[in-house]
Amino acid sequence: MSVTTVEQTFLLPDLGEGLTEAEIVRWFVTEGQEVAIDETIVEVETAKSIVEVPSPFAGIVVTLHAAEGESLAVGRPLLTVGATEGATGGAPERGAAGADPAVEPAHADAERYREEERAGSGNVLIGYGTSAHAGATRRRRPRAGAQQARTPAAEPGTRGPVRVISPLVRKIARDHGIDLRGVAPTGYRGIITKADVERAITETRPAAAVAPVAAPTPAVAPSAPSAPAAPAAPSERRIPLSGFRKAVSTALTRSRAEIPEATVWVDVDATALWELRESARTADDPGPGLLAYIARFVVAGLKAYPVLNSRLDVERDEIVELDAINLGLAVQGERGLVVPAVIGADSMTTAGLDAAIRDVTARARSGRATAEELAAGTFTLNNYGGFRVDGSAAIINHPQVAILGLGRIIDRPWVVDGQIVPRKITQMSFVFDHRVCDGGTAAGFMRSVADAIENPASAIARM
Image (cartoon, rainbow, N blue to C red; front, top):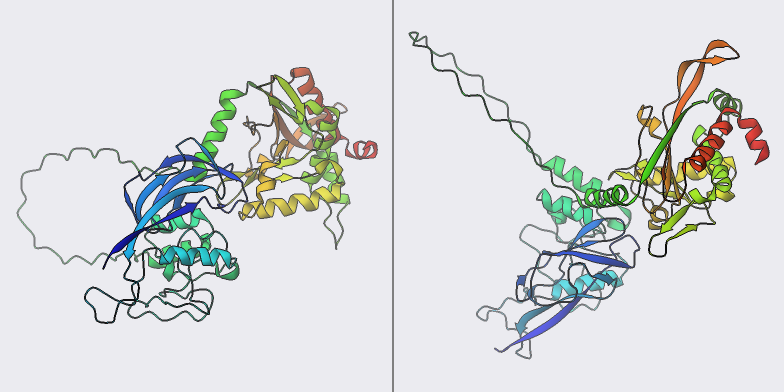
């Protein structure tokens, strides 16, 4: 039987974020190296994260189509693999030496992967097999003890279709030795989610062993005291940075390295705003939250000081003021801190801002904010008071030029008309890029927001 080499090219997939390109960070394989199906071949960085991409092909790496540091568009060739297969002109006969009709060519799993993508299952980055469809001429023989899947989502222990869109989910499963073919999916259309993998990790974690009760030992004659044991060396535990944390580290390091930032802060009496919010509540409608009112005051301040709703073009030495105000909100999500934006915040009422803020923050916490929302922010509002802290020297979300932070609102003694009375006080901090404006502009913006918080009714009447 003669053999032939079939070259197969893997195109850079959309990594589940709707982005158009990715940068090659690091290759894990070289030309001439053998690679297996689902083996990690490359680490790429998108605008949102750094992810590892597995190979859908097995064989010898023929060509790496991009160098490290080079950007590659989605759908362009990533690498080419050469696989060998028999070329006898017909199927092997049953019982022939070395032949098994259930064993398929090396590229069969990859072909199934492409079929599943064409069927609309999304960007499947692991488990390239799919259920046999009508007209298929070959089926993979299941492992002993496995049963054929009866539903689109494979049941635990089967070799049915495994559908994982998120590379993060795939990495968590690999790091914990979880076989995704045995994970019951709960996601839409049978997609395995992060929660599914975490549940599988918990279920497979061995129960803590119970120490047996020691039998009493016979009394022995006292002996000479032994020398004291040497103190144990301090232990340490190393935790690798996840792809998300690497991306966050890169973004924050760039911000601190490039932006000469300055910070100003002020204590604000929010009693009137608190009372306004309470008066707007009814039994059937809680009304807008405090953050919605403050967001509206921030939008008004940015209209008065548009240089703070801008970005700096360092190549052309120009400040680029932006017409639309897309208000970014710092949100602590499942993966970490993200900053989705309320797009078009400048055209919204207080009630509209309240609804938009609740929607985008809820989706961001569960990891469902869109790529557009995560990239569209032109200015950031950070409510760190939700963590029960009073102040913060925040880091500007590059390429924005400013960020406003709010601490918790607490009762404090305050002087009003010469009398010390309890008031609802919050500390507000403002960090700005000193290249785009000076302290006078920053103070003017900050006071406009603070004055609106202290006199909200009159501020809203003027908007």
